[in-house]
Image 1 (cartoon, rainbow, N blue to C red):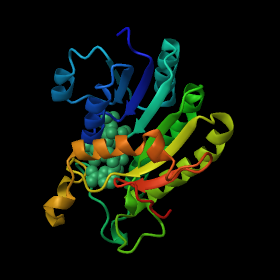
Image 2 (cartoon, helix red, strand yellow):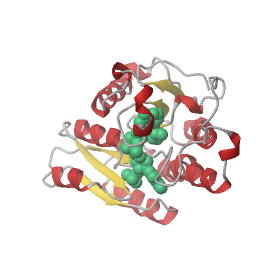
Image 3 (tube, rainbow, N blue to C red):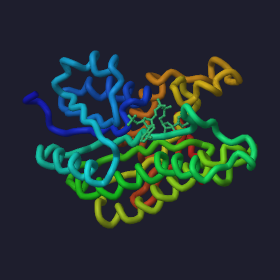
Image 4 (spheres, rainbow, N blue to C red):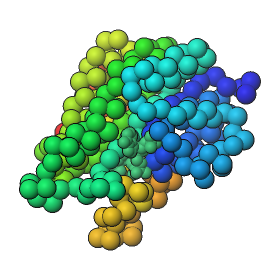
Length: 252
Ligand SMILES: NC(=O)c1ccc[n+]([C@@H]2O[C@H](COP(=O)([O-])OP(=O)(O)OC[C@H]3O[C@@H](n4cnc5c(N)ncnc54)[C@H](OP(=O)(O)O)[C@@H]3O)[C@@H](O)[C@H]2O)c1
């Protein structure tokens, strides 16, 4: 513990990709990791039982609870150098993404919009005071290629597409303000590619095996893409980058 000099924050840590990120981050002796979730899967909590460099924090993602987490991390005085906002919803036990406009529903749209855009927006709102420090910091927000307005060729998935497009605009707008108020921060909007998680499970049958990524692969790719030298390829001070798992730019 005495070696710890910085910290990282992983939000939405029940995600399989988030858990693979945490495994990687814990390899850095100098990094304390804060993981936030509504509820941690038992197998993950059990596996992490003796990890002294990991704090598991439960959160319902309302402003008060988010603020309490920000204040808790501030109180450690550890500069937070990496943040990952992994939350995302495509379907749940009661709905699947829309195939046609008749399936569009105000209730589903609001649920999806809340998870995919409002929750990350609340974090971006409160992170700005935590992340303003002398060290470089990267915030990665998980979006999806289908949130690209110019890349929309096949349609469908109205709520998911619209909510990820809204998320992208929130991050792009925040990057302009962060450039004034937290100049050390870079914002990345990230598309992981189709990855074998709960989110993609109902849609995996049409995906070629080599195009269905393991969460561990995506986590390794992302961590190499946010290294300082790699970052220079696609991100500048007041512009968020929208990139995929290979580091290729995606059109907004
Ligand atoms: N898997 C893919 O093929 C794929 C493709 C493109 C983009 N993505 C994006 O990648 C990110 C990670 O997804 P994943 O594939 O790892 O999915 P996953 O394993 O299903 O994880 C779901 C994530 O969404 C959060 N979440 C779910 N319901 C929520 C709710 N009601 N309120 C707040 N948070 C909620 C979870 O947070 P808790 O820890 O709090 O439960 C968790 O972070 C998502 O943003 C997703 O849209 C995934």
